[in-house]
Amino acid sequence: MGTGVKRFEDLIPWQKARELARAVYDATTKDRFARDFGLRDQITRAAVSIMSNLAEGFERGTRREFHQYIVIAKASCAEVRSDLYLVHDVGYLDPSHFERLMAQANEVARIVNALRSAVQKRRDEKK
Image 1: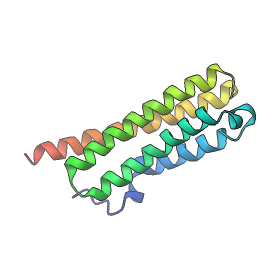
Image 2 (image 1 turned 135 degrees about the horizontal axis):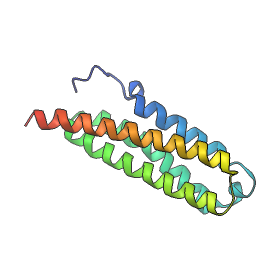
Image 3 (image 1 turned 30 degrees about the horizontal axis):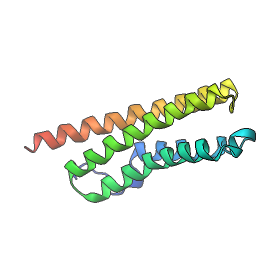
Image 4 (image 1 turned 45 degrees about the horizontal axis):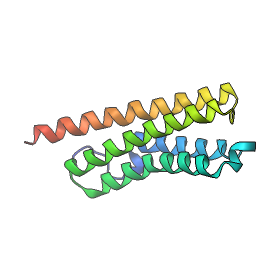
């Protein structure tokens, strides 16, 4: 796609999304959170969805499709953040752990959005 990036694994947003997914999985092993199967599965699916959609969109090979999948990944970032508020509200994580995860999720959202903007700009230039 002309970006110099040859593999999705080279994308910084994918790398950061992978770190977030790992951190979310780690958090879900704690105490009551580990036993809340519904919320645990929901937040882990959303976190995995970010990195999966970035990878799938990249591999599709067109800017239009890549952009579409980046938008889906960004929406999954919002889902993770929303779920984190509930996790916090029900007391599954201590406040500092919640803040660290939320900061990480916000960082992923920012860089995914930057990628979305860049891909959209390049896509629009080709029109």
